[in-house]
Length: 228
Image (tube, rainbow, N blue to C red; front, side):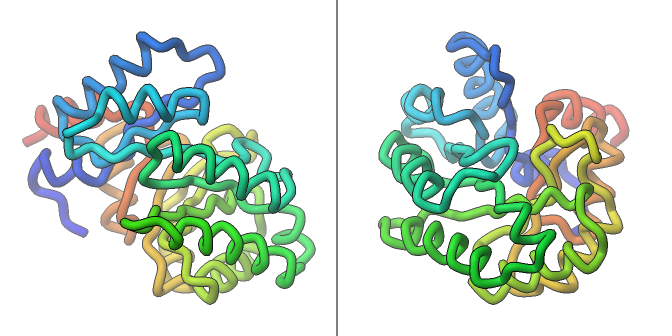
């Protein structure tokens, strides 16, 4: 994807605030920024989905809720319940951390069943809710990344996402975006984790990412405008 316009770039960004200490005023500011700059989505913790939905009512900005962040170690039943609650609170999109143990162990039945359960829930709504699956790519080796991408692609999830941005192993890389694009060809790709500059965002999009998750969205757009 070639980005020549700040509005196009903004439309690829999920404006994110997942700090445990975030307040209602900060969530309101996040939503106001999203409307002002034209970001695609705001991504917030379950606690704030209803408030974000209220603030963004009648705007073009979507509401994203996270599930099982940051570890991904909740049971499938719990993840489905979390996602259902977020959707009823107003989430248009769900970012769910995959079960990393099943990826590392190569347990395809467990991972497939989990993704299918979440996808069935998201597809049961009209319009359907987007499902993004976070594989925490920096914590995996190449074979594990390929395994996770192939399962996600086979299950038909909407997006495969690099990272939570909270794992000490790191965040998104251009190399991982290219790998994910290759091995999950039917899924869109979301790059997230450590993306703080316009240069990084553009590199991710040019490598094949469809969406960027970042808490540095305003800074990125302002940098991009200065470079034009």
